[in-house]
Amino acid sequence: MADRNGEVFCRYGGKDISYSIPSISYIPGVKNGVPVTGIAAKAFLSCKTLQKLEIPDGVAWIGDWAFAHMQNLEELTLPFSEIAYGKKVFLDCVRLKKITVRGSTAKNEGLPYFLASAATLMDAAAGKNALWKPEYAADERTHGEWMEQYDRALAEYLKAPDEEGFEPVFIGWFHVEDMDEQIPKYMVKRRKEKIRLVLQRLRYPAYLQTGMEAYLHGYLKAGMRAERNDGLPAGRAEGSSLVTETICDRKQEYCRQVCYLKILKESGCLNGESIRLLMEGLQETNPEMTAYLLECMEEERAGEDFFNGLEL
Image 1 (tube, rainbow, N blue to C red):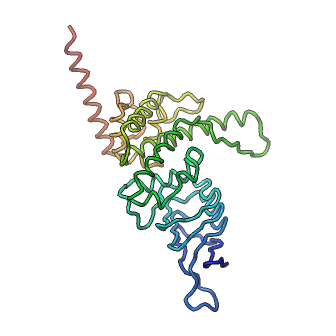
Image 2 (image 1 turned 60 degrees about the vertical axis):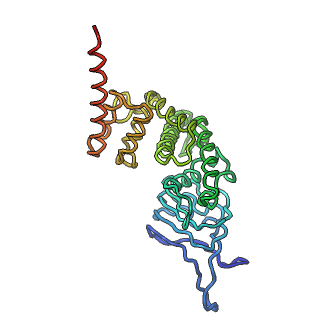
Image 3 (image 1 turned 180 degrees about the horizontal axis):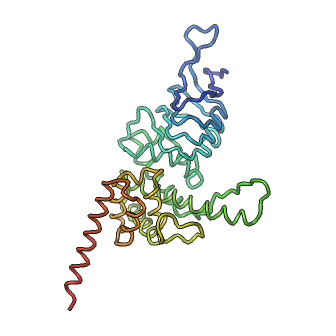
């Protein structure tokens, strides 16, 4: 299907894991083909197989719900150019973790993760038009300003009520008891998303201002002190917090990289009890992280022994 400037990519019907939309559409009667300049509404709607998707240079617009409900999409690559986006393009893209801008000049290793968070989690807090500008974020000349916008949106998202955005799922007959079960589960999921965003921002601290950094460290420390009290199973260890559960989640990267434990230490989250909980949760799945926790435990004990020695 053609528009005024070129061809429109209408509908993906394959079963690939990785796919690059062609930049040229070859149609009968046109010798060199026609450039693809748009992606139609619902073009990839509910595609369950794709994990990686690449948008070619020359695409100027993407229609409503184009990537909605792509629940296995993990990585998206965009051109370094302005694109007009329709409504709810990334709705329910729950696994989308990286959005890379091809040819980006911004020197920030965390940018792909920040863009993915902006697209999937923080629309409601920031407003799509205020934050969703990949070409602005990827340009080194304007990247610092975009990061300031991102941090403001992140602060708003963290401060928003945990039940904000809840929509009940109706399956068969729906009772009040079902609602009472769905809301706590939604709130736990949202709290964990907030913790992941904090860990992510502290891991890539470019352009992070002192006040915001202190706020993020304080957020983790408060989360480490708060035990599970939502009526759901406590997780891997009695008394565990959502912070320890997030770090020990084997489906996520946090249980595989020691940098996240170092962030917890900088936040003042590691003490004897939290170290014990983390070691129980990790269960020696990562020798480097276990070794780091043992070092922290030794430091903790050495400090206690020193002050105990001062007692009369």
